[in-house]
Amino acid sequence: MKYYFLTLFLVLSYFTQAQNISGTELLERAISFHDPEGNWKSFKGKMLVEMETPNSSLRRTVIQMDLLSNYFKSTVTKDSYTIESELDKGECTLKLNGSTAIIPKIKDSLKITCDRAKMLKNYYTYLYGLPMKLKDPGTLIDSKVTTKTFKGKEYLVLKAGYDKEVGSDTWYFYFDPKTYAMEVYRFFHDESKNDGEYILLSELTHVDGMNIPKVRAWYYNKDNTYLGTDILQKMTAIP
Image 1 (cartoon, rainbow, N blue to C red):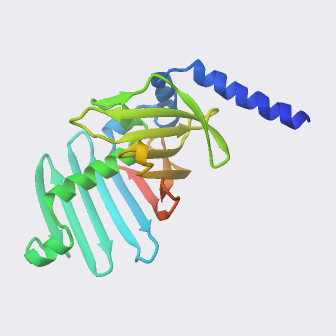
Image 2 (image 1 turned 180 degrees about the vertical axis):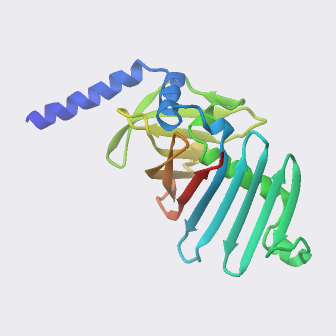
């Protein structure tokens, strides 16, 4: 019986906590956990990310970025191809296996374009910059914090939307109610259809005063189908 009352007490405590904290306050506490020194906005360094997907070979991506200088480069290796996409202050350079001379048919089949280079930049700087990126202009933080149970654990949940010029998806971010660590996020294109995906975060890597989730496992919202896992094998800051 005492365990029942302890569980009830904890649930009520988290519910009360959600009532007494605003969305912006929760975001600030989460940022204080993940980036207490405010270093992400000026991060300069390298990352090695390996992606494992069902019925597919391993994809290795080396990322070089200098956020203050607006520099981003990804080097993606899969099977016999190595694709380099570099964005330097808006200038785009593309290479396949070390050469800028790419046969158009192969370029199309492998989607080697500057638009994709920009997509990769947005993808990696957004996902690995969370929750700090939620302070970017155009992000709409819901003032109400809710509590939800997900995979058997209680979380404080923050809802975020975006200005039309920035994006149209709805995102939910799940934070540990004690530490404010971000452990889950999910997004919907159309929430009424239960589309989109959720991502489970685990482990932390400690770089330049930041606590960055190392493992991201992706699933469909609609049926929990497993899609793949991104593993941050290495992350180093460059002075």
